[in-house]
Length: 89
Picture 1 (tube, rainbow, N blue to C red):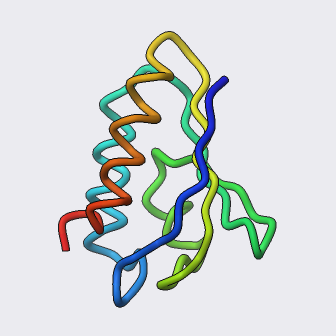
Picture 2 (cartoon, rainbow, N blue to C red; picture 1 turned 180 degrees about the vertical axis):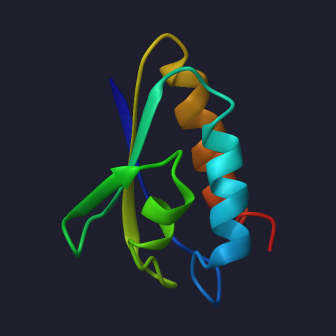
C-alpha cells in the first residue's frame, strides 16, 4: 500500500469539473484508490464522483491519497501530479 498527502491548490477547491478529472484519472488504475479529507476524517472511494465531491475539499484542504494493488506506485505518482497541477484548472 502506498499513500501520499497533498494540499488542494484549486481556488474553488475540488468541485464538479476537477472532481470528474480526478475520478477519471483514478479509474485508469487497477489498484483500489481512496481519498481522505484529513481535517474532516472522512475517506471515500476515489473512483466515485459522488464520494469525491462529498468530501468537501476546498482550497488548502490536506488530503491523503492511498492506493493498494498491482499498479499502486504508478497510481500514486499520477494522482499526486494531477493534484499538484490543480486538476486541469
